[in-house]
Image (tube, rainbow, N blue to C red; front, side, top):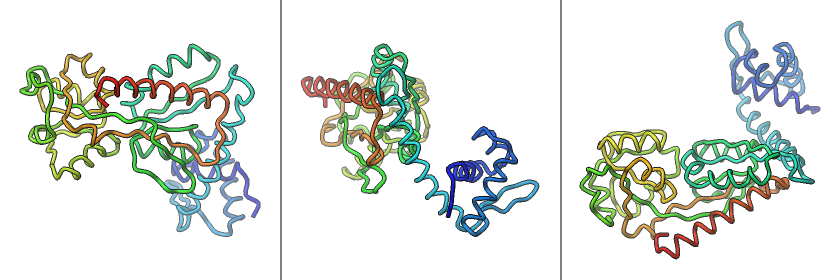
Length: 309
């Protein structure tokens, strides 16, 4: 088969958006060009990939599997493009990083500021995503690397390693009964109503693992997608929430109380660096990762010395 990069881009855009107009807009070509590229691709693979009508575009049987292979190919090409961009100097280039909104605020904000001041000509492409979307962005070559709380993966496309360990803390309103406590047990924490982050974020998954390990159940009547929402509702006295140490400062800035949990070291919150296997980082991306690791190591050393890690 003689399949082209342009055909794969058009196919993936049409598969994701289910519209020739939207697909054309996404890849900056005309609608007729998308139609022609997809027709050429179908001729190459020897079977239809979409059922077309005047109102809809529906993937045919086999299109889902082909999409997965196409994303793997495009991911490799994107990773190669990122690697070659700005390879020779830090006077240009682009760095793509994906992580959760919580980590972007609590951990990477200082790194971004430091890096941008040192290398103002390098474009920083930052994505605040769920854990699963962070992994997908790395897998598909949309970013140079991601940082997320996750389980170890053994898939061939990705390589992962722990880059930071933090402990969990309780956040409550100043009027809450916990506000005067210096520390809490996990049993204390489980006895309260929670404002809970959704399971798409690693913080929630870490808390679920604690519950399973200690045979506890954390009850909640409110579930939210953003830490800012959780902290607002905690401040209204609607419950407590559990966060990693790097979210403590935003909570304190809102006038909330942050309390340590006994045994938190044994049930920590691990963050993993996620990269495409065999993908070479550009000079700009390698420099950003080096700054990130140095910052996290210094932070880890400080927490260890303070006895809170």
